[in-house]
Image (cartoon, rainbow, N blue to C red):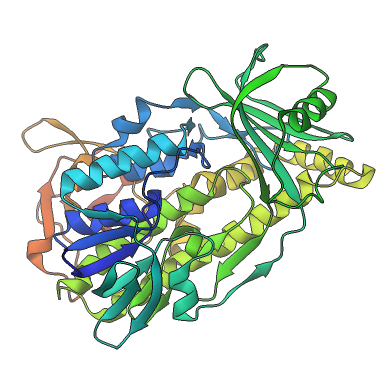
Length: 479
């Protein structure tokens, strides 16, 4: 068995697999090692948000997920009655896709194997040592080594622990229940969300045409240890009481408890060791954000780590991974913890607060703000980028939408289709117009295109644009 690679990713969940795909696409020798012998059968994550669908579209594989999921045009914040509106964003994916994590993971492993990623299962990491030039990984199957190691091994990350990276935050205070079941009498609406003095329930289709997921907060059971098994009766009775209608759940395929522990890694990088996904941030699954933020961690890290490994960029480029993504983790930490407060308390004061927030969410600007946080559409890197994003303008650090372009030959093309190889993209909208990237960026790493001026609002007055492999603007020339 080969034991030495450019990069070793620990953890073959969605985040680890996607990172490995990005590295392999860039020509990096990468292996994924995973303690589980088989992919998980349980669908912990059920949603792919719009920005994550854009992430897949950037590499030409969004259809693999769209064909297996169910689009839901709105989202929720703390299960409030006023839904979050995604239609205000400039995107081809103004919705949340309901799709089981098991399916998402299978599609990502399929992509990884197509690219030639080495996926090794049944290997448990027991130790990690960074000697300054390589990282050595002790396992029950021998010692692996890589120029860099990425921990994508979940909330109890062995990589994070052995790297000595702190994981501070809020201890678990509440136990919530989850049940994937068949409903003998399913609701007419695709999503049911009810919170009152009896507790909180959310019910949504799993996307397989048969099962629904029930997420339940029963105030009489929030003290129960997460390790105690859940019974169907424990879910069915309180659900009917809270909703006021019995959907008759039966034939459970997964019953579980989860806690509201919320933590954020002190850094996403320590020398040659990096963290992504749940290894860097955990929280209660409020708004279905965890896996999505992790996938976007991987997209940000992938092209940077590949460039450094291949000697095409300085090592300090990896520092920008922590600089750009850890603030997103902090936002995730805050908004999920706030939602926990709203869905685990049922006293008159909290219920009144919920009603106040329901009204505030009817204000378009407020709704847009929270919808942007949950969907990932509002991610922008840098204070100036945030201001430009708020003003609806393109600028360095702002995500570029998938704009339809017209080539000099008159043929149509999608901007995202020009990024499927994971290279930098330079677009000239006016003859001779150009912009420069970082001083270390090689011309061979950039695909240059000359296109006709576009009438798209985001491109008004733009003469030239340089886009990073992850779809964010690096430089722009505007009239």
